[in-house]
Image (tube, rainbow over the protein chains, first blue to last red):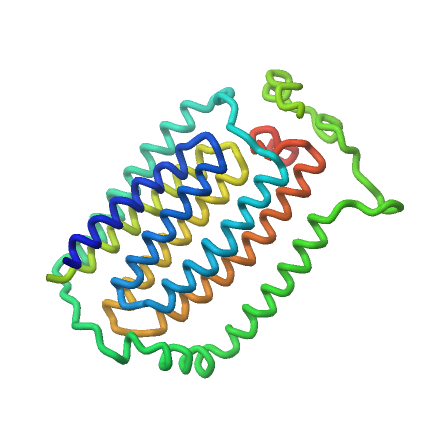
Length: 194
Length: 101
């Protein structure tokens, strides 16, 4: 039973992860990412971490991916255009390199931990009470620092994303004014005019 | 029958590599960002499988922190993309090459 659930959600997560990186439309990539995150949440429950699984669904799919969708909507970004100069070679190198990496890392982990057997899940390990005790005693300082980090991130995001106010120094708004580019800009200048 | 813990680890390695391919080959800034989130999640899965193997709840706490830092990173990164879009009218990373050469 557990093996069947693991196999189903592992295959689903790998399949939709491939959709995330391969689909030319970013909105569909983001929606596939939602499926991947849900599948991983199921695997987290199988690993005896229901609290982390709940956080995964709430924080990742509920907040972060909604933020992604908002930005995609705000900037009105569509499909990627056809690949530019030098792109196919880069793609094949990345694919082969990543395949080797996955093979070596997977084999390493498999050889190290293949024969390991798991103890049964204990109530201690599953207990959210113990987890929060740990979080607010041993890890109290990192917890507070992460809160501060989130505050700084929100302020910085606001400061960067807000429209320039009148009277502030505003940089030139046209593309190509700041830097001239060799091939890419000439090839598809005007192709992405709204 | 329980699932051998090594399967989770191999799955994490595979997901991490898929994310790497995405981060290296895509040109849309937001899709690159999604690939990085995918890599972060693969690492979370690996941390949780080690936590399960060792029976130590500290792994779950660390994953909690990774989630929080990922949220901060997403906020900053997306704000950067909005600012870049305002300047250059594109977030295609092949055309954001001011600092490249």
